Amino acid sequence: MNVAELLILKPDVPRSLHACLEEIADLLEQIESGEARRARRLATSLYANIRYGDREYIAERGLNEYLTDFLQRIQRIAGQIQKDYMGWKQ
Image 1 (cartoon, one colour):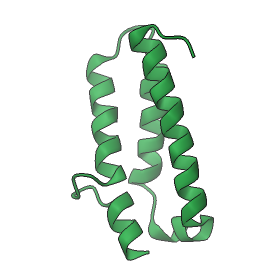
Image 2 (cartoon, rainbow, N blue to C red; image 1 turned 45 degrees about the horizontal axis):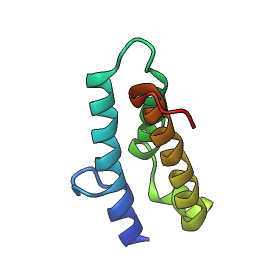
Image 3 (cartoon, one colour; image 1 turned 90 degrees about the horizontal axis):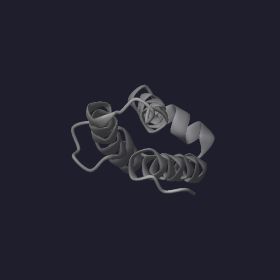
Image 4 (cartoon, rainbow, N blue to C red; image 1 turned 60 degrees about the vertical axis):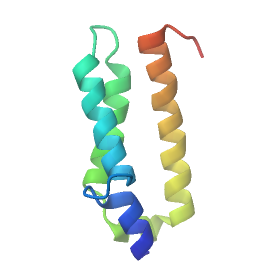
């Protein structure tokens, strides 16, 4: 669980999920256009979950389930970015 906490929740670890998602949310805020707010909302919501999350929540939920849900949400964000900023339909 210590390794999971380090790789998921630590904002000062450059490749942690926390640090990467913070960067995604910040970048989407900088480039947001009028109709492209959904991607930013999805990213900000997931970032808030990680920012205010803790190892106890991850342990209670189960690491596999937590990461599976995280990956599904990242996929939704990626799809929304494609739709909002690149005009791609899913």
